[in-house]
Image 1 (cartoon, protein in one colour):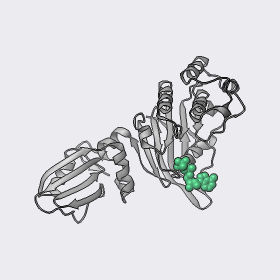
Image 2 (cartoon, helix red, strand yellow):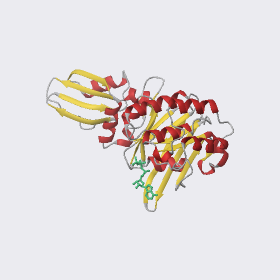
Image 3 (tube, helix red, strand yellow):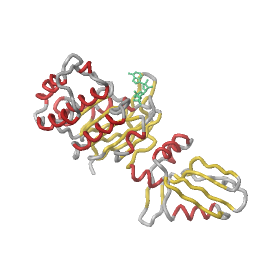
Image 4 (cartoon, protein in one colour):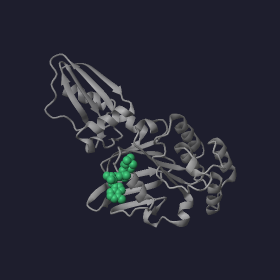
Length: 314
Ligand code: ATP
């Protein structure tokens, strides 16, 4: 599958401060990729480098098959970029802004524009400076979707919106972006959980993982092992067992590379006195928390690679 965005060792520093510390990631065409991370993790910086607003300090970045540094002019006819902090022409009415933007895009779809204005209930005669935050985002989307961009890049598009407006926006965008790739940032996992197909987790300028939501959910398990005697952790714990703890006769940990069949055999070998082993799937929030709390983030968070024989390797 082709990548709509590809980053290889991507770095960005401001003076001596390294904000992106070597990012490797791919956003497959057609994906809805959510870049999640706390405030200050580097999400906006990454997006600005990808959109050629900021110059990278090292590594490579490709957007729609081209070096991100060559993004300009006509290439932006295929890209929508909407940011939370985007400056809008405040003195213009919504209608005037749409009139202004339309001629820049030869492929502009008037019917889609009308549909969006109706769907988002946008007041065409109202000046942008008088719009609420949610309405401003809707106006920004109404001026970005009608040219049917191949790639949509949204920086914190949903931050601070009430749930109703948020759902309306998500539905409105997804319905009209069937063939497009969406790359959006968010600091709130709950916000993206229901619709993202891929997720990347950025912490302090490093991407702790970048993968499909489904595989992430498949490889993380909460494991509880009840022993016949007092519980003790093995002297050497596998790196992929996160947050291990032993209390009375119970050992608990989060397995970050669980593989049915293989992992159970490993539990039996390491805990011969096991009376009961419980393996439970984890909600995404719990997975993120386990990664964030764990001190072994990098290796443990790497996606699993499975061989044809079902063996698990790093
Ligand atoms: P938020 O969710 O709060 O928007 P973020 O993940 O988008 O955060 P960035 O805005 O990319 O994070 O900022 C990452 C770090 O880079 C922060 O410490 C910020 O202070 C720093 N930074 C961003 N832009 C600049 C700049 N122009 N000059 C110096 N430092 C900057």
